[in-house]
Amino acid sequence: MKNLKFIYILFIIITGCTSSESNQNLDEKNENNLSHDDEHIEVSQTQFETTNFELGKADSLDFSNKVSVRGSIDVPPKNKASVSTFFEGYVSETSLLIGDMVDKGDVLAELSNPDYITIQQDYVENNARLEFLESEFQRKKNLYDDQVISQKVFQETRSLYKAAQAKDNALKKKIQLMNLSSKRILEGHFSEKIKIYSPISGKISKMFISQGTYVAKSEPMMEIIDTDHVHLELKVFEKDLNFIKPDQAVEFQIPEISDSIYEGYVRLIGAEIESDRSIKVHAHPKEESERFKVGMFVKASFNKNTKKQLALPESAFADLDGHTYVLKLKQQDGDHYVFEKIEVEKTEQQNSFKPLITSAEIDMNTVFLTKGTFDLLTGDSAGH
Image (cartoon, rainbow, N blue to C red):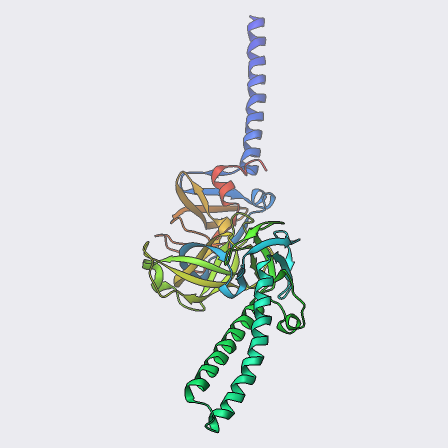
């Protein structure tokens, strides 16, 4: 009997201690952690401060729909040159590599061909003949004026002189295209080589020749690009053309090199719709960069239908199970905050803000949780 009484007393003591400890733990949990139902979440002052939550009101900001387009970096035709020659020959000298900088007028290569000497020889011989025919023409003209010779004889002499004069002009023009001096050739300085000069300043972008290469007439030898004035060559489809106009702002990215967003503006809009129902739009970046290389792929966007909307920072939104939510401050009572979970439309951020589109009643005086929304909704902040 005494044993049973002792066991009963011991049970009461243990039960009392356990109950006291449970109540103490429950009080601590209520003090430090969150409590919430499906629509409301309650946060203590301690929890709010230790997790660095922030409150804020919605701002009225400009938001636009985006017209997304693609294209590439290019340069104007005047900033790109394909180097070729009017005279076939063999490359006797070139030291350039792709990426080398050249200035306008620099020697790019030298070509050799014995036929060059033949052209110079023809020029000298015709020039000597021209001097004789010019003298003969003047002599016969005087005789014709004095009616000493017939008109036929005078016309034959004039014809020979004019033909030699035309040939002299043609050969002199050839000499100029060969980048040789007609004066030095008449002095007897012949050359079996001609030099090819750079038509623009820029970088060698393509190289088709090497030492000993045979180059035919008009065959490309190399390409030069002046990258000081790159532009965007964008493809805009016909359905979006009404939203684009000259001087309109454009944002673009070069995904292969960075996530940075660059700014530009529309310079020109093409005049012809292509077979895929698109048109070319020429845009200029506001700032030049050495990172912009001709041929790089570009993603760009234009704004359309700009309008004012209430907005919150991107951190105020949380995406859960295919839905998007914000937390509206419903009540602040003493050391507790009560938030109401509001579903909003899923929207794209612009400049780190998102438009606040919902059927719930809100205005510019409504207070929201602007930092920590996702953690609070998922419970990741509990116990912090």
